[in-house]
Length: 297
Image (cartoon, rainbow, N blue to C red):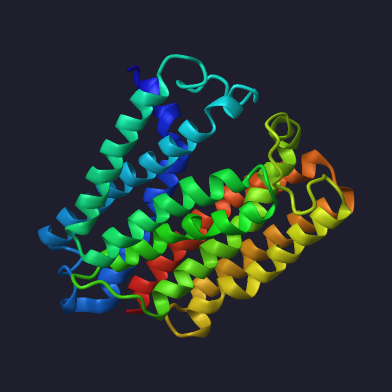
């Protein structure tokens, strides 16, 4: 298999972002729990386990994407942006994809499970929910976006749990999950707005009302409003300082403005601006959370 085909099969850019998000949370967990975790930020043990998280997360995410493409192979042939993926293009059979997906899924789950049991269980849950709940719902109802937002927000939670030998979900873990969970709605609806014509070729119903209309734009704007206070929770609950507060506030206000422009114009250009804004928003806020958390601690 060519590397280009493998990259398309696992949706490399998406997989990279998932692993990045989990990695940030892993380091926050190590710092949050001090000597009770995998060691300090300078210990070899900590970085070995970080590499396990990266490898396991990459394999698990790749497996989930692979299963998604097996289920949607006939639909992918209908859309311009997906027809050149290896399975719909005929360069790989669904049987080969299944074997590869199972191998990646089992290997990734095993690697993550060596960190702690909860990390392994959460990784299995994310695969099942993404591939076998979110994927079939995409053609049935816009509720698919809400279902998909759960596995989509699990990477920072998994990364945080992985940063502790015994694995536990605390307030910081829930805040990391909440930020990514709420962020996904304007992010995904902006993408769906831009790609709506292509999505409709496959029968996907992903915009809130199923159409590029004012109500869909209003619901998208509402979630950019909700994201603003949610992004400030780390500082409100004392887990980060004013640096994160300032950066999150500025990023959220810019994001909010982009959502308002979409509401006012309902143009694809505005949705594309919101989409690109979302690409920058999450990594900037997560990195600032990490830096501010380390500085504060």
